[in-house]
Amino acid sequence: MKGKVVIITGGSSGIGLAMAHEFGRLGAFVAISARNGERLQLALTELKDKGIEAMAVKADVSLESDCRNLIEKVVEAKGKIDILVNNAGVSMRAAFKNTDLSVIKTLMDINFWGTVYCTKFALPYLLESKGSVAGIISVAGYIGLPGRTGYSASKFAIRGFLETLRCENLKTGLHVLVAAPGFTSSNIRKSALLADGSLQGDTPRNEGKMMSSEKAAAKIVRAIAKRKNKLVLTFLEGKFAVTLNHYFPRVVNYLVYNQMSKEPDSPFH
Picture (spheres, rainbow, N blue to C red):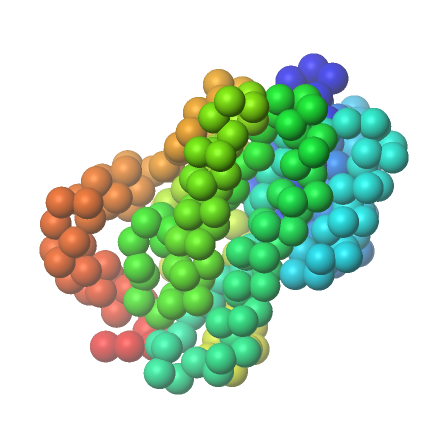
């Protein structure tokens, strides 16, 4: 990673910031972006205090112009891009029958279109460097999670987009990773949207029992370094669930439904 130029969207907290620390620890230059300018600057200060060479570009990835500007600012500063990590994302928690359609659109705009926009503008530089593009999806990109219709739909879409991009670039040297963390301790659930688009706030799940953002980040960075195509994190709620769903989807439907319905204030029963 020494001397590599890495862009991480959603890099001001959670897995994104943890990846920035990990890439930086390995000698890469890291460019982080996020919508919240204040939090972004705090994250940049945190990285620089650790001796990591970094820059921050405020960007709302749901806006095509912001994504173009992010890529242009990094190229202007460093002259190249080696790795793009599409990490920015938002979740939801509501039954579809009660969900305002604007919530679904918001999730698609940030999660899916943010990945498409950033990848489109970074692609010429990634092809030149024979670099890597990674998409951080979720087990929800393999298994439809009840109460998360928009979230699962956006993550399935990202997986389809990136797997097709990989196929198109079999002979160009471009590396494409689709990384799917299981339930990970991060702030994505706190910023999840409810049926009316308001923020969920406190997470209904026990964060203490989940994989840490730092551990997930280290595994994702290692997968990028090894140029892997696919990474599914955590065993029971990750690899086992995805494999079981392939062979016994109805069983997984029941298991997932039962687990999700036990959450406090579950949107369905």
